[in-house]
Image (cartoon, rainbow, N blue to C red; front, side):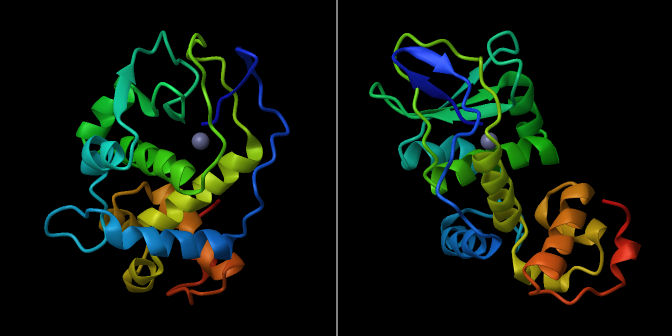
Length: 203
Ligand SMILES: [Zn+2]
């Protein structure tokens, strides 16, 4: 989620262009970051999203806070930079999901990390209210690609025999795992599928 503020007024960032990125460049960035991220105890690939949210974010200068649904009903979370300090804001119900290890709660954390890692322009000035945000297609696409790359590295995809297995190994939804396999096979061409793609189910 990206917010821009100009002259103290929140603008809808339609058409906001971020630096172009390819699947391959996002993959490379994710590979460079992942070794520094904690994985869940006893797991090889499953990122410890809760620890990333509560410890890693403050360590890299992005402390977190939660917000009520009435404050940010439009989105699960967003990250802002501000002269008063950076912050990652997560909606309370999503924070509960994160604590429950729900794939949506987990992926929301990595999505925001992906925005931070890709240095998307996110600025909120004092006096601006939360909410009033709208997706920016470009930066959202990049953040989503980065989230998948961070959560489901190629090594995991090579081992997994199905999207279900990949999802279990990486703590994602089966839908995300399916999409990830299709991206690696069809777009990046770095993965040979274990089965014909149609067996992975519909889009
Ligand atoms: Zn986003």
